Amino acid sequence: MRLIEQAGLLALRRVDPETAHGLALKALRMGVLALPGVVTSERLRCTVAGLDLPNPVGLAAGFDKNAVALAPLSRAGFGFVEVGAATPRPQPGNPRPRLFRLTQDRAAINRFGFNNDGMQAIGARLAQRPQGAVIGLNLGANKDSDDRAGDFARVLQHCGPHIDFATVNVSSPNTERLRDLQGKAALGALLAGVIEVRDAFPIRIPIFLKIAPDLTPNELADIAEVARATPVDAIIATNTTLDRDGLNGPHAQEKGGLSGAPLFEKSTRVLAQLSALTDGKIPLIGVGGVASAADAYTKICAGASAVQLYTALVFNGLSLVRDIALGLDDLLARDGFANVAEAVASKRKDWV
Image (cartoon, rainbow, N blue to C red; front, side, top):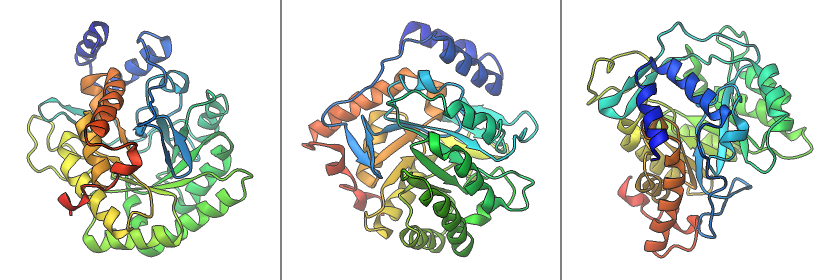
């Protein structure tokens, strides 16, 4: 970590987390940080759901909710970037405070509630996106919508021409009853509507599905069945958790979704189970607690074709992205893998 980045992180920890997040985005747009550009190698290059990636390390949705930092993020070393979630209409989200640092646990709890500028503003920014980067959009539903399933399709209809992939996010715990859409019948109908919109575009946009880690084995099996039948192009496993086991510090019992290091084992186990249920036929994106090259490699060996991170950046800075990608290259080489695809699910049995 560079000294200027370390100093910046220390300064940001002196203000409340949501303000710090806004300042971090502003610094990124102002060019305060030195960015590495594309990080890649023959070993790191991969194709996931038809997308050609320079490396398999992506930015998870939530860091840049409103697509305001697309240009600098495209130079930050990520293999792909996901922004959003975007809803049809702007909404303020839940009352503040709604983001909490759990420094002792290297974690965070948020209950944002899909605060965003809405698809009109976000779509306009995506229309000005940098070329050459792989950029996706997390689709969401308005809290007060009479047709939440239809909201996902509406956002895709508006923003689809400007993105490389779209994620159906039915796994946020911060919008009341949103996770009910993960049920077999509701999820099948929702995905069918989204894919109908997608199929009308001249260029095929891969559709990803983001699931929660707090699913029973039967619920997970149902999701795998729906994903195979739809078909979905990839599954992101997982979103934040409602679990609070083993947490420390004053904010441990705040309501909302928990992300970061405590989620790593739980999300990786769900990932491996899903890999087994889909027989490796649907690409999986591993998310939850990735904070090092070893973490990313573990997710890949458990069944992920690529990984995403966000919370670790709060504690380690943006230089972590380059470190993870280069470290992952070394780990693949150490174990004799010529590319990422060869390592996928190679140690799945350790997690199921």
